[in-house]
Length: 94
Image (cartoon, rainbow, N blue to C red; front, side, top):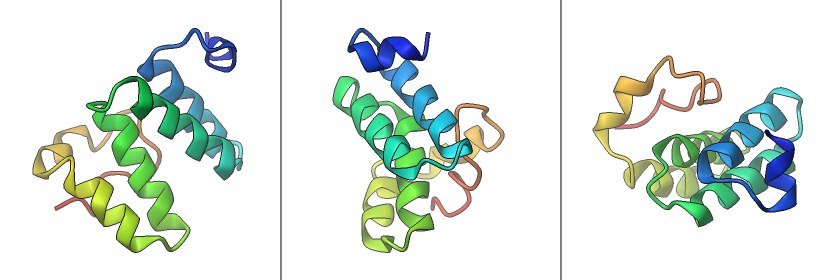
């Protein structure tokens, strides 16, 4: 299923999952590209947006992290233990 993302036949959720896996494997560039691809497919994908914000934050891109987090809002807290999120993705959303 995740390999479909690299073939271009994936939906937003699959790209997000691919990013989560890439992050877990220590491949931040691949994770970034997957989260961006997820948002290109569906700009309302909250999980992908939170993951992208967490990735930005982890690498010191605080302004970009805040911008992405602001697009989600306070409702993100309900996703705190969601397996479709990388660790810390909800931690600093206000």
